[in-house]
Length: 311
Image (cartoon, rainbow, N blue to C red; front, side, top):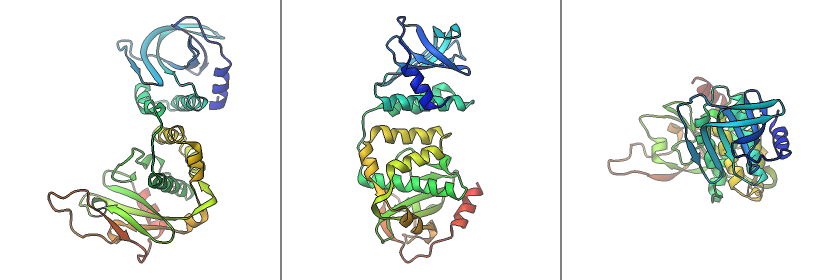
């Protein structure tokens, strides 16, 4: 059963009158349903009867090992369950809750506690993202989409937690940093430690972007990557967070010409990039500077592809 079918079926269900009674329908060994206040609930049978906990955020409640009654068309199931309750009232939040819990069902090895920790920050207040941050997100997502198109899936390599040192982490030592610039000048700002290090082997992906009212919007690009990375909880959660906490019109108005972006992608090793040759002196940190890559020859995408596949 897909997300929309589950969501529509939940909307048709009436609430119960008992706090510990849930009106549900089953999907395999799991249940979707509503509680006495008609909040959407997701239930799975407890695996550890010795552990009973409650965690709550503004929009979610997670109860482990609760003895309750599940009522379905097939009958009654009285058992101990782990239950996630969605307190959100908007259709967007409720649909996201269903989509992410439905993903949990497909990931047989997932732990529901870890899953709750991963999704709980989704349903918070709207965040402020600068124009430069939106541009950076666009470039990173476009790189994921571009590599998918040439047969390399890098969804699970994306450092979707904000403000990490590098955008993509292949392993402990191999990293990729994506940079973007508006117009025709390939000048990017780097942290010194991204270019000069004794630890990391770093590639730089450089994109030139051109604003275009008929171009590919960040909103559409998010949905494209969501579809391409649909089995990756971390990526999906990060993208849902973007959709839920940023105004749709803002995401739809950020548009860049896709053909121009594809034509003006370049690939460099960190050693190719103009930089200070030495490490930061002791007592100096967070050094930033602009590097001009306009006159440097781009490496071939096949070289980067082979380097990625080596891992």
